[in-house]
Length: 113
Length: 111
Image 1: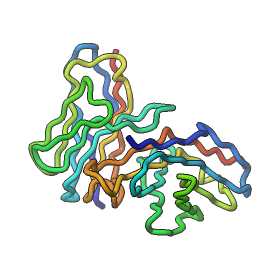
Image 2 (image 1 turned 120 degrees about the vertical axis):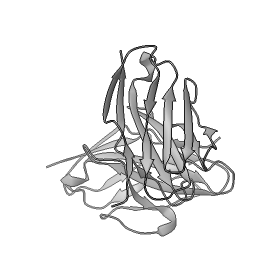
Image 3 (image 1 turned 60 degrees about the vertical axis):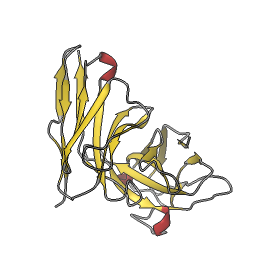
């Protein structure tokens, strides 16, 4: 069964900490995405990548960065966590940037205290 | 920029009643529209896409370019349809290769 795997289901971090969220896919997809999911706001695109070492800003990139050193892995980095980054983070991958639909991970619920 | 609007946060219906989840979009180019669903404690998954013109779990959606809408419909709701539903748009004719999602509608089907 093909998958997108997010390394942590729940995380609790302190304000100011540097936080790494990891995502791995085994479908050889070129495109990978990070969204945050908040009630009433839906899914908002943070960053995406269409190739190794390539990245593009989404709609809400402030306070985040990403790393894609290998095709299967896409990491989201919170440089200095803040309480307004408490959210559900969803990783997804796709073979054509979304035209064929995404495969989502199960999500990481991050709480910043 | 493109935008997807789902005007209802919550839609509550009784089992057997018809369901229509509304989705409107603003984009002047050629869109590809999708519906995604998230059942309780499960990951978000693709329900259907307009280009396939298929019916999944009894749901259908028609793209109306004149009204810029892609409403999701089912003639008879089932309790297992209770979930969070997201409408999403993909721009076919520009370089941004990512989906734009709406804010979601929670469907509650009561027995």
